[in-house]
Image 1: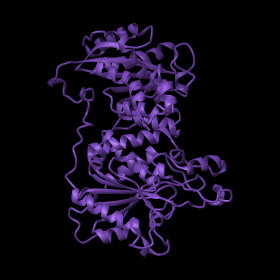
Image 2 (image 1 turned 90 degrees about the vertical axis):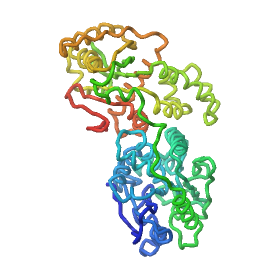
Image 3 (image 1 turned 120 degrees about the vertical axis):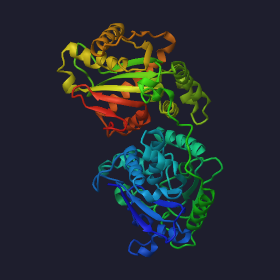
Image 4 (image 1 turned 90 degrees about the horizontal axis):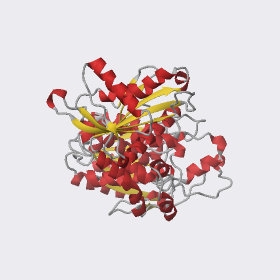
Amino acid sequence: MTDLISVYEPVKATGKPRVVFIHGLDGDIRKTWMADPKDQGTLWPRWVGEDTGCPVWLLGYGAALTRWKADAAALPRQATAVIERLSNEPNLFEGPLILIGHSLGGLVIKTALQHGILRDVERHRELACNIKGIAFVGTPHFGSKLATIAAWTHFMRANPQVSDLRLDDAHLETLNQYFLKLRADLGFKTRTFMETQPVRLPWWLGGRLLPGVTIVSPMSSEAHVPGEVGIPIEADHITICKPKDRNAAIHSSLIAFIREVETAATPPATVNTFAPLASENIEAISPEDRTDTSVHLAFSTFGVYLDADTDAPICTSVCIVTDAPDRLRQQLQQIPVLIQNNPLVNVAAKSRAQGMTLQQLLEDPGARAVVLRELEVMSFSAYMYYCPKEAFDKLPREDRVHKLFVGPLVHRLSKKGERFEQAHAHLVDMPVYLKEAAEAVHSAYHRAVDVPRPGANKYAVLEDLAALIARACARHLSAPDDAESANLFESLRTRIRYAEDVATGVKHKRDVNPLP
């Protein structure tokens, strides 16, 4: 459950920044920010409101460290819940928004910002564009020792979000690179506070064995924002967000930061970098007002066998549609070059990347971050059709062909305004399926469509992309709580425009019954 409570409301707040504090792992909506949990007068966010004249809120979410205490969702789902709660508070839109995150709270902010910009949810996008300042307090931008300790201490039953904090996690690197890109595009300001003292862990986390641990190292605390440097605070991970008085360095610096944001505040930004891609507009235009758009289709499956039971909990078919096939091909073929030129990729990963397929690059820990970042901004739309193993294994061969091959092609070929030039697939029977689909469109809609010709060899990488998405979707739907699969799926989610359970007919769109 995500809560938002007001702790300071000034008499005059017109145009003033709105400030929201977001706690971290195992934090409490109030006590996280209190030097004395029994004394409400030590609530730091209230001091911030009083000293700046800004309205201040506290946001709480499920962030329990272990399942002994409570269940908690993985980082992507937490971020979705947070941005939804914030976007439903009208007062947050009446002035520039400043978010302050402690520990995991900083990662939640970064992920929520990413979701707000990439997903087609207008209220989330509006909220994200109103963010003018973000302050990180002991945030592990590149992971924390706590996740390693938690993994070692198996009996603690760590929640999924703990694995999101693993040191040198590829997803965190991708998240940070995208955050830096968003900062450059949106122009919001940042401030970073770093802990400098170790904390003594409780006995059940190895406290008797370890004299003290710096939960977030200086290297991980730095987001590497151009023109910014982390501010060292004489405190540990727990006390850094609990200043004892208003003379504390972190309090003075945060007050100055809020005033800086207020001075520089401008109307909500328009994000041109992430404007809808041409291929995403295909279905947004009225058929009466457009001419047919030339497109290419790529098709692949995962776990779909016509004469045997599937070996996957969920099998999938994926159609990729793009009206810019050459640009998409070039972007995909450029990924190995980008890996070679990226200074953050180590030499060993660069060496391995030579000659790797797209799927192999994605699975390589050293190259994964670059691949994910590039996939998020490519020009294509994906349509996914899936079937649980229990239902698939009962289907006769002809139904498997119809539901997972011909049916998806009918769905795509029947769309007015699209003229399919080429179809790319590794399937030997693809020409047969395309012909059957074209005949089905003519029979059902009394409209003739041209059968797309087989794809040219130079577009083979489009087939690889379709295969990657089919595999990623199947794995995520089979185990939605698996952190690695969830992180990959979140990077692809905005490209998946439509999905359907072919066994039940249940349909999913990005803004109607979205995929889990």
